[in-house]
Image 1 (cartoon, rainbow, N blue to C red):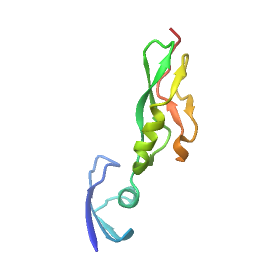
Image 2 (cartoon, helix red, strand yellow; image 1 turned 180 degrees about the vertical axis):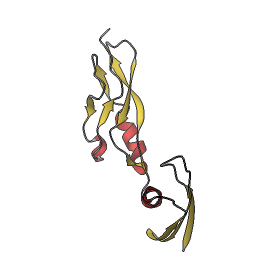
Image 3 (cartoon, helix red, strand yellow; image 1 turned 30 degrees about the vertical axis):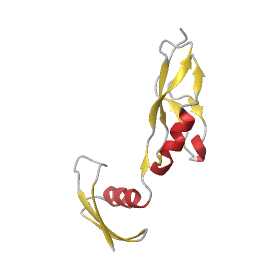
Length: 121
């Protein structure tokens, strides 16, 4: 049996969580003061997920790069593969905030979207 200790990041409480596992099976989660803490601990121990934030190159924009973000979390173990694809993305201004730049990034189900608007220069 493995015991993992985590600090929940879902709210300012910062609960100290203890997760007991047998392989990939969670036996118990303790220390959370709300259900979100238990959900966070289970996800973090089985397959951690993260929002990807980065930049992509933009042609004819007021800046040389455009900030981007995934519209939902993707598995942490796919982050390097996702970044490999993000590095190949190049867009042309104008771009609107929220515009989908890459649909279903690396088959993750998450879209890569512009996190700000950028006018044509």
